[in-house]
Amino acid sequence: MNKAPKQAPQKKSPVVPVLMIALVVIGGAIGFKVFKSSPPTTPPTPPAAGNVSHPVPAPRPAPLPSKAGTPTQTSPAPAARPTPPTAPSPPSEVARVDAKDLVATLASVTGKEPVAPDQAQKWKESLQQLIRQGASSVPVIQQFLSSNLDASFAGVGGVGALGYNSLRSAMLDALGQIGGPESTQAMLQVLQTSIFPTDISTLANTLNAQAPGQYQQAILDAVRQQLNMGGMDQLGGANVLPLFQALASEAASGANVTADLVQYAEKWPFYAAIALASLPEGSGVPSLEQIAQGIVPGNQGAAVQALAELASQNAAALNSLLDMAKNGQLSDSILSQLAPFLAGRQYQLGPPQDASSGGVLTFHMANGNQDFSAYDASGTMTQPQIAQRISMIDQLLQAVPASDTATVDSLQEQRNILAGKQTH
Image (cartoon, helix red, strand yellow):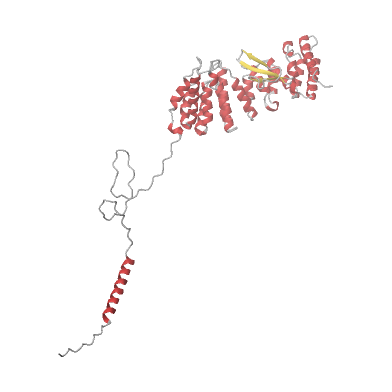
């Protein structure tokens, strides 16, 4: 049996494997390129156990919280710009009270009955609220002051807690504390309309503190207007002391008020004489001499006493006294009252400024409703000043008649007191 001849094994061709490798390389390159050009995706969140797995959408912005009872918006919306927190309103705005109501609360204290502590506290709080509200309170305060009404708290139980002696003084102080152009204009208006001398003095002090000298003419006009009314008895007998104090204060700032003081020297003789004696650089001495000599109306005794207290610093005042004494122009009763003033007694308008001064005296004159005081300045004198006053007393002792024993005794008594203060 013939065996079929063995076929030689066929040699595998290398082309096929090469082609396959090339296809793999090319496919990988294409896949890598596609991968590089595609944006990365967030891997899906694994589903919770028991839930059907599905792709998780991209997260949306959380919706803004809603008010209670309002459905929450779930539809997509652009993110809102955050709103800055609103600043709280100032307490003065939150607690603002109608100024008329505050003034009504203040006016409820009439000064006719005792003030309870809780009422005083409410009153003070209302006043402070009126001040805190500033310029908006000014028209109401001005309206009250223009009505020329007032309530005096003098002598009423419990009013010490209020801190003011009258309703008007509290209102005027409120204007001063508020300040600003509205307040200043209101004060100038009250100067023109007020019938209270105390208003003029208070407003003058406040305005001068704010702008020294700027409102001097307005102050003088107001003083003159009220003095004119008082001279015609149109102020209800009010004490005009604050008006003379205002004149003296303005004179110290350069105003010429001599004619004003002389004009009213008959109506208010001690106020006029004391104010004339206080004028700077002895400018009131000539007018005091004319009053003392009877050339112009006034009180001779008040003028002579004012000259006596000026004699130690003003030669014209001393010479005038000596001449009138020598010429018999002064009565014994007037001469007998001069010794304390030559020895150091000083008059001043109103109550004593320093109650600790020695020999303080207070005076009230029914004629013109005048209140003034005096104090003894000898306790602060130097030895040369004491010697000077002893010399003045000796000169007057030589000028008065020896028969005027009351004057001689008074002068000798004051001389002995001064001599006892001399050191040897």
